[in-house]
Length: 171
Image (cartoon, rainbow, N blue to C red; front, side, top):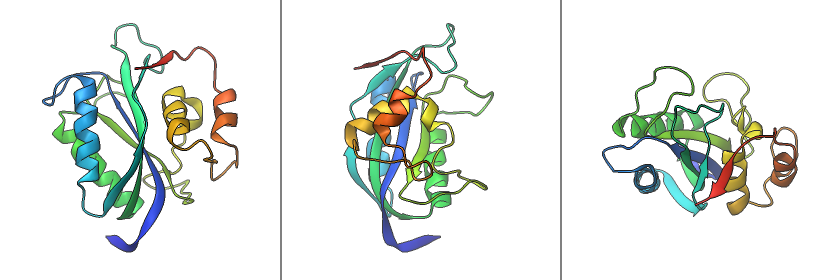
């Protein structure tokens, strides 16, 4: 079900550490951005640069991820947007097995405007976003004034409070 109004400042986290039919992780992510922008009721507003990051939790047997964040406006509900994102993941070859498994594509709703949902699906804002440099650094690149809708903390404050030991670099 869709709403006729656009919800602005919807942030989607993208990540990949395995190849897909589209190619290497960066190519898969570029295709995902185009596919999201082509969804009915979704308008791409901004996109971050790509970052490369170690898996969280750290796993030496996994390749590093390529991550980014895009901002969209959407007429879709959070649940409908999540369903569309999960269809794109499946089309890329993602098969959900164990938590934190390597994957050709991972798409998460990071924040959905000022909407807060602490029960149901999806949870927004994403409950673990505040712990992850691979979400916060790309988010800061496109929305430096963004504030967490629950805590009110700025993205810069969240970055300053990140747990130590996360390896991330700009691609």
